[in-house]
Amino acid sequence: MSQIDAGQIIAKIKSLRDNPKALMAALAFVFLLDGFILVRVQFIPLVHMWSKANKIKADIRQASVDSKSAATFKNSLNNLRAEIADLNKKAITEGDLPQALETISKFAAISTVKILRIRPMTEVRRLQKPVKVSNDEEFIREKISITAMAGFHQLGRFLALIENSPIFFDVRKLEIRTDSKEYTKHSITIFLDVVLRKS
Image 1 (cartoon, rainbow, N blue to C red):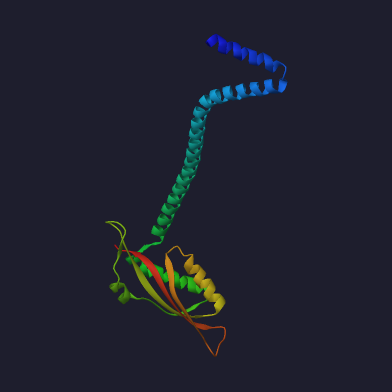
Image 2 (cartoon, helix red, strand yellow):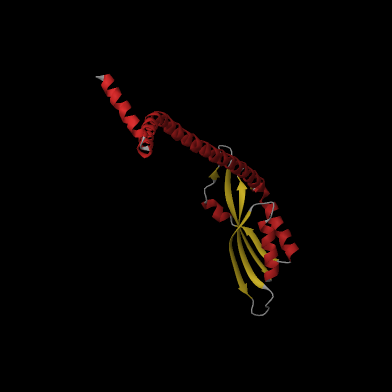
């Protein structure tokens, strides 16, 4: 029976010899069927490899971003440590408070600001709780009140010197009252905070 079937198939192929279009269609069908069966077997692992390659590519991108973030974090950490060290240098001890007042007076003299009164506001300090940074270190803000006379330009220079001082000063409040008699001089009240390291 199988010989008859094979013979019939051979006869059909010989009959297609006279019809080239039908022969081409049959060959194309056999080629596509063969290609589909063979390629499908090879294509499935290729799809898995492609998805793994995409996942690895995404992991590499993420690792690159993470390494950049780690470097940025490390730089930020180093910058913060430098800022903390700088602020620690700018904090003075309670015994150095007269030095801070003297520094303010020097800045006033350089800026031609006439200080009428300068005093630490110790009554305010008593109400504050110290900030504990570690077991050994505590900081507190000492408030300083300054009453002075100056023009706007002199006041600006004075405030710039205070802000860039080697001692940490923080201008908390600034009041300016113009003098009706002399327009170039104004009555000024400044409230500063200075950071003190408790000894």
